Amino acid sequence: MTMTHRPIDRSKLFLSLLSGVLMTAAFPRTGWLWVAWMALIPLLLALRDISVKDGFRLGWLCGLIHALGLLYWLSHTMSTYGHLPIYLTIGILLLFSTYIGLYTAIFSTLIIYLGRTPMRALLIAPLLWAALEYLRSFLLSGFTWGYLGHSQYAWLTLIQSSDLWGVYGLSALIVLFNMALFFLILSRTGKTWQGLSIPRPLAWRGTLLAILCLSSTLIYGYVRLGQIERLSAEAPHLTAGLAQGNIPQAEKWDPAFQIASTKQYIKLSGQLGPQKPDLIVWPETATPFYLFHNQALTRMVQRGVQNAGSAHIIGSPAVRKSDDGIAYFNSAYLLDPQGNPLARYDKAHLVPFGEYVPFKKWLPFLGKIVAQVGDFHAGPPGGILEYDGHRIGPLICYDGIFPNLARAAVNNGADLLVNLTNDAWYGRTSAPYQHLVQYVFRAVETRRSLIRATNTGISGFIHPTGRIENTTRLFESAARIQPVACLKTRSLYVRVGDTFARVCLAVVVGLGLLQRFRRKS
Image 1 (cartoon, rainbow, N blue to C red):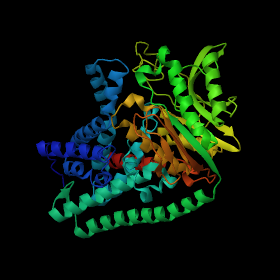
Image 2 (image 1 turned 90 degrees about the vertical axis):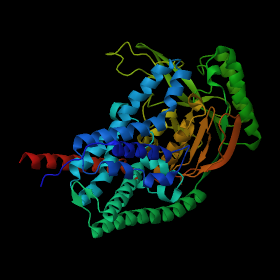
Image 3 (image 1 turned 120 degrees about the vertical axis):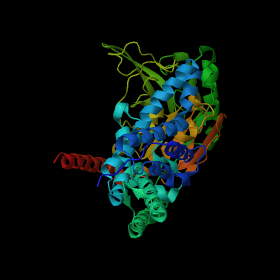
Image 4 (image 1 turned 180 degrees about the horizontal axis):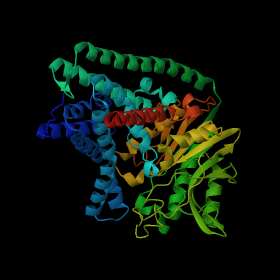
């Protein structure tokens, strides 16, 4: 029997738009995390009984709207700090959102193509979504921002399973729940999927499967929370401080403000000094000069470190001369309590068009979007800073949204993660809140405490369970201090990485090839 495909009408367009809006609403700052568990249902209703080609269009529309709502702040960053005209920043935002929307378009296309029966669609959809998120982690240099599972960062019991399969497992679970509810609705209303009716027993089996998976995840999370709390209480602790200087981005690289900016961080370290922290962390490029090259300002920093009496990790640009020329790095220096340099970490994953220009050899006319930064070189992943028996894994800004870099540090022996970043680029948009969410998952995936020092906020500490603690407000000058647990256990995710997501991708590719072979035969 040949199914008659329905054309795209205004109701289907509205449903696709609605799903895009609902997905965005699940993320900070709206933060209605419960919405994620039903956000895809309108899109799935729109995909009923339509062609593969129309499914692509509706999925792309949904993904585009979601990306625009989630990433609108890119336009603000490019216009305010890249000094680009607003029409150009909107165009770039639309182009990037179009790319992100393609993943939802592919999901919609393949769920129609591969999910010809309700049960097949129910089982394939979670694997397909996880596989597409995994592809997004490395295609075109990778962009892991705003995965569906990230929306659940505040549900601590749920997210504990990230130490098994990363955020991809949570995304798959959310999609499974959406699919189960969707087929339950179709069964109750007598509507069809791909021309097939949904028997009530089948719909209830799907619902029970989703409830069983969610319940199992929550039971695991409940048990694991208790285990990690106990391990953290028994583990060695390090008293850590952080400084948030709140230096306006417009002043950060102005030579007239170099001394004032440096003094601001020295002052904050001095406030922490009487409490005798073992380590104080300054943000990304906290020193608006090349540390250990500008001698006068470097001596000022070293005296500040000596007066505070604590080891420091300080974000600074770095330069290295060689026979091949001059190489610039976005770095984190470890200084001992006397101000002597012990080690340096160079940022491993640079921001495209912000810290380097991709395809520069072939597209020399492309310029950097953000004017204040230079052409940096990347350092090796998994770099470690060693101090007083601890191995510290730094993640500088963009580094931290990529789970493989935190994993590499922990596999190299890191018992503590440190994030240095400058979120001043984002202003008072939702981006600083969305950025913070990423580090909740780095802490849970690796079971490491994480210290987060930012220039303008949000700074704070993240417990190995993912609990956010002792945070600063946006755009305030502040110092924070607290003990952090230094665990040495290695989670399954640290050991095997994205194996779950790779299996999902392999299954989807295999099913696609099988489907194509059957059609040809």
